[in-house]
Every structure is written in C-alpha cells, then in structure tokens.
Length: 311
Image (cartoon, rainbow, N blue to C red; front, side, top):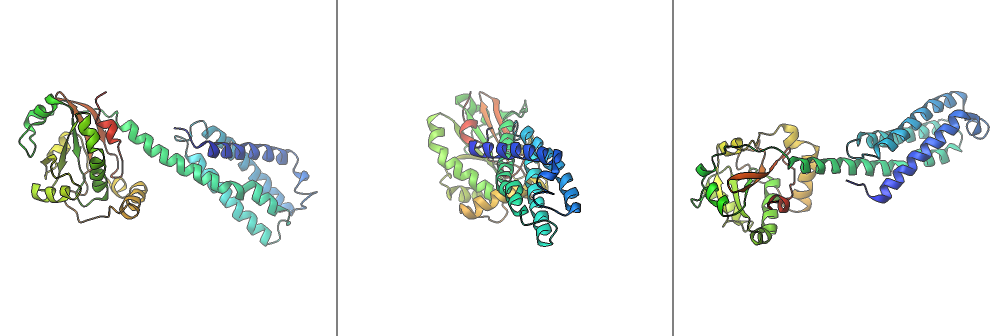
C-alpha cells in the first residue's frame, strides 16, 4: 500500500533535510552554535548529541519509507523525537540557555515536521490494520465440516444450498454490538449485488430466532435464511475463537466503535449473545469453503463484495 504522495514527499524532505543539516553541524558545530548563535557551551554539548539522534532518526525514516506499513514504529519515534525536541528547545529558550536565533532552528528542525510525522504514523497504522485484514482472507479453512448436517431456519442444509450456488455464511457478533449492526447494514447495502451474482447469504447468530427476527427486521433482512447457534458450537466448528480484551476493547476497536456508533449513528445495545465471541465470514461453493475471513478483532471490516465472489 502506498502512502499519499504529498505526505511521502514531505517525510522524504524532512529526512533528507535532517541528515544534511545534522551532518553539517556535527562536523562544523561552530558554524551556527558558537559564532552565529553564541549558545551556552553546555547547551552546545547537549545539542551535539541531539544531532546524532537527529541524523539517526532521519536515516531510519528513509529506511521506513521503503515499507511504511511494516516499519510504522519509525514514524511514531520520529514524531515523538520532534515533539520532545521542540519542548526541550522551548524550555532552553525560556531559561536563557539558547539565544533567540534558535526560534528559527526550532521551527525548521522540529516544529515543522511534527504534524507530517503524526499523519504518516496514523496512515501506516491504519494501512497495517487493512493489510492484516486482507491477509486474513488467506486463512486456512477446516475440512469435514459436515455441511449436510447444518440446517437453516427454512430447513435447507448448507450442502444443498451450496450445490445450487455460492453461499456466504456470515457469523455475527451479538446483536447489541455496534460492529454487528455495521455488518448488517453492509449486507443490506450489498444485497442487490449479491443476488445478481447468484450468492446466497445465510446468517449465523447466538440468540433464539424470535429475537433474531426482530433485530434483522430493523435492517430489512428478516427474510434471510439464518441459523441459531446459542452455544456457539458452529462458531467453534468453523474455527472462530473467543476474543481477548484487546481484541474486543483495544484501541482499534474503540476508535472504530466511536466512528460507527456515534458518527454514523449505529449506536450500541444490550448484549444479545456471547459478547466474547469473534465473528467471521465464509464462502461455500459445492460443499467446500473456498474463502474465509476470521476476524482478529471485533472491529475488523472485511470486504463483503470480495468474499461473496467465487474466483
């Protein structure tokens, strides 16, 4: 995945500037610190070692730009370095350890780059989440699922349905979950496209069918075939695990929960099912699972359109 071009160029400029500026002043510190700015000698020594770190961070940034997702920590480190350095320079200026000329150095060397580094770190972390979800499609599937023994609310077995065409088996979170509601809204949005490509959707939930009918009707999905699995036996058979607290309440989950629950109005409701259970989506064709997505966190957002198509 490629970072926005302007952001990539800005961070590259920052790294090149840091390397050149740092090397010049390490080799020739008198150029600015003594003759021009006349800084305190103790401050000069501190600045000398900060320059070493400045160059190291800049070199690391250039290295990270070759693979911004996997080396996102460099951007976090770089942003924190510029932030901490800015605070240190301001403190030194306020206490008379540096001359007023260092205000310009503060802006050019640190303050100017804090926001780009923060944006790049945020992008890299977000891109890493997305990449993780894409790679999750490659998860192995379980053989011998005994699809002939799994019946829907309308009496059809998964073996029968998948013999007629692709079946997208959607394991839901508990109905009070914001992410379950988001999944249902996405299924409603994609319903027409799914029908056009001949893919049938079957939902798996953890409550009795009366509760499920009420919840699904809210999203216009009450007509969909479904399977009640209150003991989560089917979830376990398909390799779907219980989530840890980080997978259910970690930073990624909280962030997406706020976005979907508050900003997009999906809200959150009472627990209706096992709140620890992670969901998943499986595409079954001719009695075999041909695609699988097992959520690694409650907030993962798989590509339903991709998962619904037989390659």
